Image 1 (cartoon, rainbow, N blue to C red):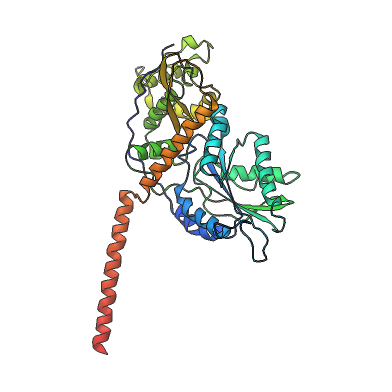
Image 2: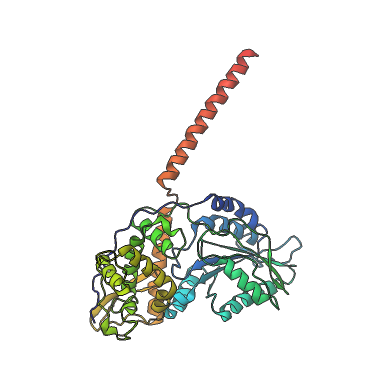
Length: 424
């Protein structure tokens, strides 16, 4: 087997801006909604556990917690006017756990808990009823800790297409006995939910309600290589409209990521030996997108006139395959084996990767993986701090225009005042 020793990073375009008006409207509504919220259920995508952190929410959520918790030295936690304790919980749910390798879930959960002890982290797949029941029980137990509260109100937030509406339908089905019709519409495309609907009952005893919310993208994805990569990642999981990117750009990044996850035997090789079942019948791993799309086009008989490989159709098929099957295949794999006295890169999901240097060739322990993840989380959060306040060129122009218009308005107001003073 040929192992890829050098995996070059693909050239990526600057990220597009996609922040429709309904997202901005919800951002303005969020502080008022939080005043009647007891539990924030924040959804992120397990494949992008860091990239799907939405910095747009952080300021409002921190203010909500500070207002409800009261003084930092309070020993009893938040209290209502009558002195009874009230809930103030933040639960982060990583959806689509079946699309990331199981071996990294517990180390990542421990790494995030160490960094954010005031948050609860939970991994779930909507296809696993036991995950839904466990999450429902978690929320019910939160409600039972506050028996004096007449009801528990849950606000669900997150980026587009992380499965908020699907989760609420499933939680409602788990918490209410008997047949429960689907209450919220769902879609594989981002942007279906545009307003905050009326409350949805999740459980009658203890009484629990939830609000769905529109998926909110970052107003500005970022500058340079980091911003470019962040935008492509979000497009791959359909977090932003795929049409904003050239399909071959997405295919190039997907090829790179699958090579990083397993440089010995990337998941896409299954496409080439799916009929024979013989791994030796598949071509060796490659970093060359044109070469890969040539091979894939011929494998799928996607040819133009004259037998020319159709790269666009092959790239589109590659993305669909990964979303439907390839993600499951990659998630089912163990960490890439390491030969003695060698080095390679390993990764988990599309956000975390690290170098492995191992003289013995033994697999990494869960504790070693956790340390890698903690270091990567710290680096990512540090990057977010340096990006704080960055805006796109479009937003810069908009702000400049607003400043100009404000100056003009002040001049007009001053002239009117001067005229009134002269006539009095």
